[in-house]
Length: 189
Image 1 (cartoon, rainbow, N blue to C red):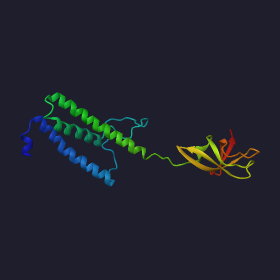
Image 2: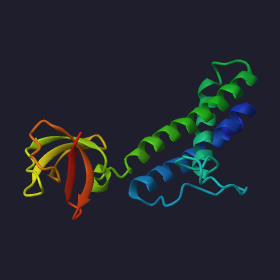
Image 3: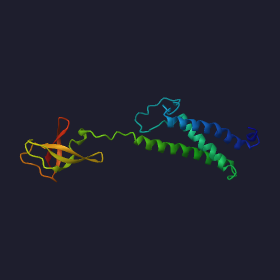
Image 4: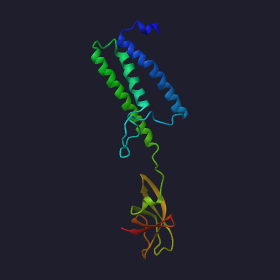
């Protein structure tokens, strides 16, 4: 560590921050990949109700502090000899730390999209329009099939109708009822 003592004070501070923060970051990354990361970090020192926000992670957490310090320290080290003004160097280091937290936020937000439940539920078809695929006999004497779009996915589902006559293929219909949790009752539009 005598190498660090011969450095200028600001550069020495950047290195003293960069070394432990990098080690902690590597440990966090390994724990994340092996599934050992059960929490986002240390809770904040203030009370607030964030239940109405759509934030996928805590802004004040150990992980975000590590991300900020990682960007701050390594950008300070990287640009120390390039930027002559120490004030400008500190501003650049702070901005880089904030950018690191923002990049982490974007990555977590994209990962949270993978956890969305896009599974099909027949209840979501109620009152939606569809197209008849196979003719639906009238008076509920038989079943036909409709093509209906739910959550961006087109499904082929069984359907019946209460109307007197059959509903022919390529006719637009509306789902008015769900019976037995698997048969749609439709009506012509």
